[in-house]
Length: 411
Ligand code: ATP
Ligand code: MG
Image 1 (cartoon, rainbow, N blue to C red):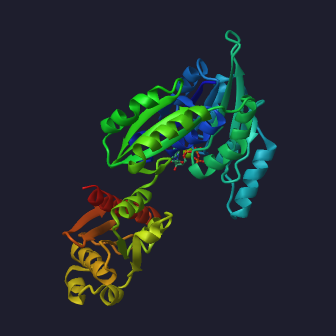
Image 2: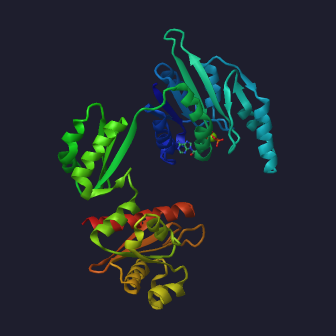
Image 3: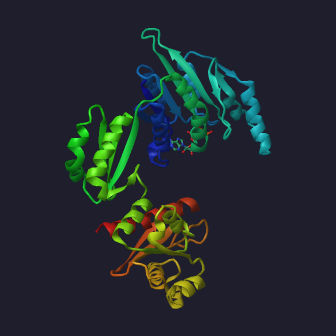
C-alpha cells in the first residue's frame, strides 16, 4: 500500500506554522503497518489540483490536510470533486450539525459555512466533533491499472484532524489491510558517543540481522539508533545494543531532554534545584515527570513575587530595584540562591515576561532570562525572546533551561 500525504496551507510554506500533521500521521500510520512514501506541501488554492492528480497516479492511500474551511482559499473539497467528476450536494445532516454548533455558541451561521456542508456525491462524511468542516472519504478506481485510490480530506486544525484520524480514518485503514502489521520499530538513545563511534561499535552486528532496517539519527548530545523489523529481528538488535552500549543508553524510544538529564545527573551522582518565576513550576514538573528524579532533584521554588525572590532565594532587594526582576542579574542571583539554599550541584532559574501585558520597549513581551549556576563553576545566563502564548512561552523557556543543563553535563 503506497501512502502519500498532501499538506495544504500557505502558512506552512511561509514558515508561520510548523507542519505537525506529517509527524502525527507518520506516527499513527506505522502501527497500522503503513508508511508514508511521499509527502508534499502546497499553498492554499489551485496547487492542490496538481498535487492530487500526481498522487492519484501512484498512491493507494492519499491523505489531504487543510483547506476545508469556509473561506475562499479553502477549495480542497471543490477541487477534489472536480477531479473525481462528482457533483457537490448539500448534505442535510452536515448542515444540521453545523447549525447546531453555531446555535450552541449563540452565533449566526453564514452562507459561507453552508459551503462546508457540500459533499461530493457518494463520498463518506467523516464527522468532526471539534469543528464545522467534516472530513471526506472518497474512492477512485483507475480504469487502466484497476487500482483503487482511497482519498481522505482532513481538516487543517490539529485539534480537529487528530481525533478524526484516530476515531474514523484509522478504522477504515485497518479494514483496508486485513492482515495487520507484522513489523515493529525500536529506537535507542545513546548518550555521549558520536554517530560514527556508535556505528563502529554496533553497526556491523546490527547489519548482520537480515531484513532489518537500520538507521542512525544525530540528536542534541545523543545518537538515536532506529531499527524496523519483525519482533524476532528487534529482539536480536536489543541483545546487541544492551551487550555493547548499555553504559551509554538513555532509555528506549527517543527519550526527551528531561529524561536524558535525570539519567545523566544520576550517572554523575549530581543534583539539581530550580528557581522559577515565569515558568511557574513547569521546569520542576518536567524533571519530576521522570522516574528516578528523586535521586537528582532536590527542590524547586516558584518565586513569583519580588519579595519571595528575596525571602526564599536571598536575591538582594536592591538588585531587583536596580535591574528589574526580569534581568540577567536577577536570574543569576536566583540560581545562585537556589544552589545555596539547597546545596545542589546545579541550579536553573527562569525570569521573564510571558505577556500579554507587562512588556516595555527594552524588554518586550517574550523576553526571558535563564540562568544555570554550578557549585564548582560560573553562572551562565542566557537571554531569549519567545513572543507567543503563555503556555508555549513556558514550554520554550523550560526546554532552553534543560538544554543549558544538558550542554553543561556533556562537557
Ligand atoms: P478552517 O475551518 O479552520 O479554515 P481548514 O481545514 O481550512 O480549516 P486550514 O485553514 O488549512 O484548515 O488550517 C486551519 C488551522 O490549522 C491553521 O491555524 C493552520 O495553521 C493549522 N494547520 C493547517 N495545517 C497544518 C499542519 N500541517 N500542521 C499544523 N497545523 C496546521
Ligand atoms: Mg482555512
